Length: 221
Image (cartoon, rainbow, N blue to C red; front, side, top):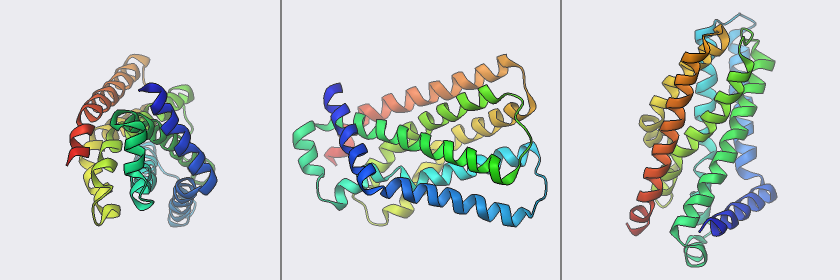
């Protein structure tokens, strides 16, 4: 099963690097979002609380513009049934989830780099903790949205349904992420930081496990 899941991931990566559809759209979205903020703020300094919230808003909506592509593209190309026959349900979910982790990580890194380069937020006092948070955020966003992208992939109005259904599920992650980002700016004690990292990791593991178990029921509908 793991070998087939890796094969699905390789297929998606090859397809993405050949077409660059998802990568181009999310990077362009992030660039536009940061540019709009840059011109709106007109050089004004933003405090820690606003900086943390804006960064997570960019990362969330960047994810909404790209993380549904894994399943949606299969339906648009009419290849979903062939993929199910050749790989099976569980390997498909493993491959799509791994692809979403990769794509979410690209979104978070691009968002963070452009945010710090163009908007000049307060300096990070805990840069290593921030890097760990970016990786955990990618894991959490992929864990919470992969099953939703599978649910809406064959529905009408999928582009509007995806963020609407994703927001309630990702809201706990966003709230904890904003708080932890503030701590990275302020230099909060390590114990509090580790506690939030553990919560995000537990959130990701629980949602990944639940989604993996529910995927068969989603595909049977």
